[in-house]
Every structure is written in C-alpha cells, then in structure tokens.
Image 1 (cartoon, helix red, strand yellow):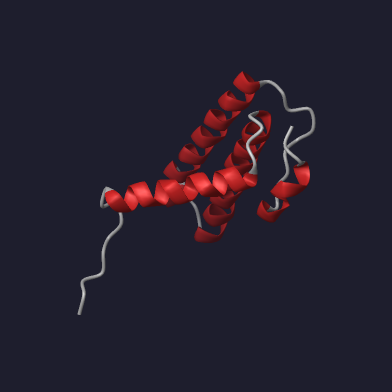
Image 2: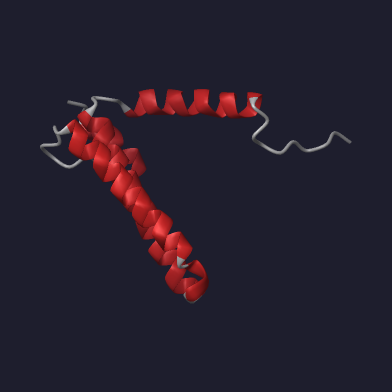
Length: 102
C-alpha cells in the first residue's frame, strides 16, 4: 500500500482499508457524474452557491481518485510524472492555444 503521508500535499489522503479496485474505479465514475450534474445546474444558482457546490464536487472527485491511486499502489510522484507526460502529449496535439510571437 502507498504511504498515506505522501498524499498530504494535495490536502487529501486515502481512506484506510481501500482494497477493492473495482469499487474504487466505479466511485471515481460516480463522483465525476455528480460533478457533471452540478455543472449543468450552474445557470440556475447564485454564483456564491454554485462555486462552492462545484468546488465540493471537484474535491469529491479528487478524493475518489486519491483512493483509487492508493488502491493501485500508485505514488504521488508517479502521478506527477504522468501529468507531465500528459501535458507534453497535449502540447504535441495542439490542445493549448499558442500566443503569437511579436
């Protein structure tokens, strides 16, 4: 199991006893669906309510992902390296707007 202390930089740590990979994978989907639904309701709410609600849903997704990563024995360092690789792929695919040179 991944050392729980290494997740503290995110302000999150995995729940104890996380060992059901399938359940943790489904939990990420559930929380992402809740975030998606919250975003659909944005136009119907005052801005101060919507921002907090959406941020809470983001945090729930991050917690579920933290639990899944721990269940898969993935370290924070490995995820950071994967994020860098993802960024490089996105740059190569032109997914970021470029600022014209002056």
